[in-house]
Length: 286
Image 1 (cartoon, rainbow, N blue to C red):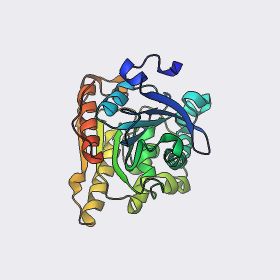
Image 2 (image 1 turned 180 degrees about the horizontal axis):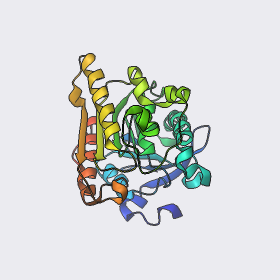
Image 3 (image 1 turned 90 degrees about the horizontal axis):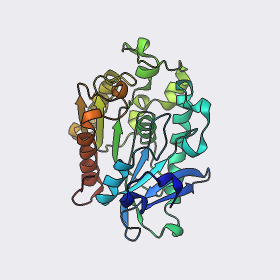
């Protein structure tokens, strides 16, 4: 067993593997319900300063529901640690590189060596905090050739309006507890999902957030959610495809890292959403 899995529940550790995927050799955690039959895939990106092994309970719920987990270490994190990339000032560097790496990792899972156990016709993408920002930006670009289309997006404590987070005074929003570096207009144009909504497919989305989040304030994400719903409505689609669950406060550190006393509720909501969108049967809690 990989020593990184030593703290995993036994049911997860026995079904988890480590790999280096894509041309960049991205450190990736893979967990599969049985490693024999095709299973839909959820591609997950963690938040800044942690690693892909942080939240084993999430992956265990997914595989018990019949969903394979694919989770990378963000650039500068985990197995490819660079201390400077842990800081808020480098967060957009992390985001930009992660967005570029998603396609290579997913395409690698189509290789013969994986035996077709990853059903790339049913793929969701998501993440927490910075990982969620990368997911929202990536879904605005065409999906990897191996995937065709993303079937679901799920984010937690994140935002799709980078200007609202990095330039809150200009956006008329409250400033987060953490000071993020000022971003050039050119970089915002390139990285901000809010400016790329024309490329976002009409995909089911689940947004979980604490309204008291002091790191990624809810107000900015609320604006993004309404903008996405408006875009869906303009296409003749149901704006209810964007599902939102917020809590006034959760008791989590800085109201950002997890959902405190509502963590179980949040995980249940997510696995039920993914099971529905990715076409699997009943769920089994953990």
